[in-house]
Length: 159
Image (cartoon, rainbow, N blue to C red; front, side):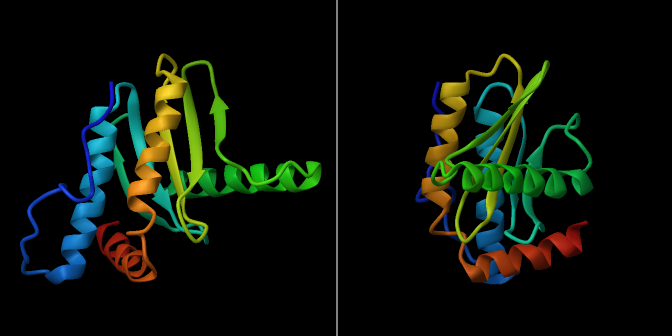
């Protein structure tokens, strides 16, 4: 089953009191929330900057503490990139950590930013990978330096 989300149809574009930047932040977070709620088994979706800052996150109550998401995501990606470099295997497409009761998948979004998704063990890996790729294709061009900066500002205020 495929999530029904699209950046073009996310929500009506209304200027809020916070301005256009705040609207873009809300829209971006809404896309993550839609991904998390529409894909069965997914309980945590996060976007982490290239330097390890948590930019946006949508999670169920059972997800790990926010201060753990960024270092785990960044560390896992760094290990994958190092292994790829060591073995001359080319660019990393996706890093998947399979555990007894769940899975954590990490993919690059843009400019080194990372999308991390945690899901239950029973989640279909092929569907998860496909939907992550679709989400990255939709938000990759939107995750501009300006939006990343705004997300950082909002993350600092929110946490």
